[in-house]
Length: 275
Image (cartoon, rainbow, N blue to C red; front, side, top):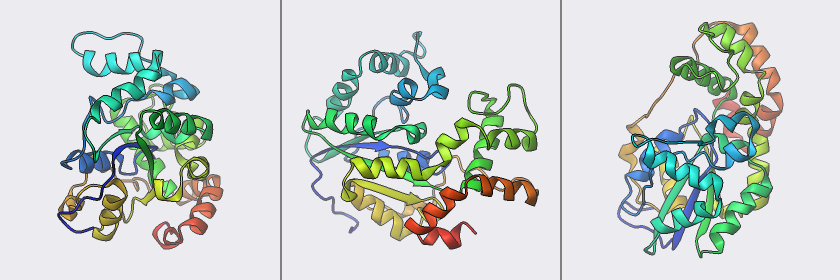
């Protein structure tokens, strides 16, 4: 895609399926900088994960106050009335050749039935839906997630309440359902591939996604102007290699061996990138 050209995309909704700690914040930053992107009240809306995924039930919006009203009021209404999800984003897409997005990393746990429901809901309003999924070396993703959640004091995603030690948190987290939902990429890719045509489903690899060629590929998929300079902007980047415990690293890799095998076959570049 050349620097100044934007392909005709009609009205497009981008569904960001994750994965957590794989560059989704950078993705939102990149899209929000595009002139034809229509930003809503949030990057992550947490509608379908809160409804469908048991360990995300804490994202159910039960109340809001004036300080939090913009985001929580929208989320609450969407969760109570899913049709409002489609109405809200349709309201942002009043022009032609514009796009908007909901990039919620825990959507990686949504099944094909829900993905088809979202696609069809927008189709009824004349809006095309595309899905994006970003992947990263599972070991690095897991370590980065543990560091991030410890820093935030987030004990809703597989880390024992009150834990502050990285090694103990990592040991508990990698076997948790919260971790599996976010790390078994093959399940997300298979579900999305069964719902979206190849032209409407983009998989990006974190380790190379900031390179100019991959930014051009992403830009063409989304229908936004190619801006390679933004590849130098790393938003919320966290180090995935934080401890020197080869035995635990091996245990984690073995636990996700099917994910490694799947990605090595489907995306051969990961063989070298994730070694």
